[in-house]
Amino acid sequence: MVETIVSIIAGSKSDIDIYQKAEKVLKENNIPYELKIISAHRDPEKLDDYLKTCQSLVYITVAGLSAALPGVVASKTEKPVIGVPVSAKLGGLDALLSIVQMPPGIPVACVGIDRGENAAYLAIRILNLSKK
Image 1 (cartoon, rainbow, N blue to C red):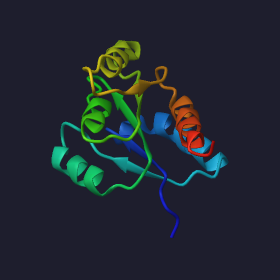
Image 2 (cartoon, one colour; image 1 turned 90 degrees about the horizontal axis):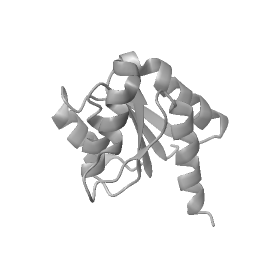
Image 3 (cartoon, rainbow, N blue to C red; image 1 turned 180 degrees about the horizontal axis):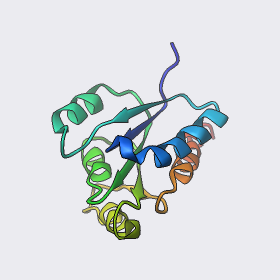
Image 4 (cartoon, rainbow, N blue to C red; image 1 turned 90 degrees about the vertical axis):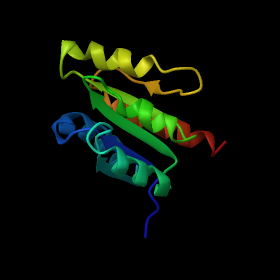
């Protein structure tokens, strides 16, 4: 069985166009990953259970609107979390600002609006640090 190295967590199936960009880059680079659709608002217990058992080294979180998912994940792990804001409303500025305004001690890396591919590239760079 292949060990999962990156977890992509999307808050909604409607974010498919964004998380598929990340999947494409990870596949092209032979990075084992898994995709989970878990809303921080609608399924908080499911998210907690997943994070307690997940062995991935990096999380890519895709979220629009209030974009709570990246911050919630970051508050429950010491592993790197990359947030991808989705342009669901307000051109994605609401999600972007939610992701970058994390409180001290709860860091979330943030890529551009709808840039799932950049999240995957950043995850690969983070993973490559352990190879040096």
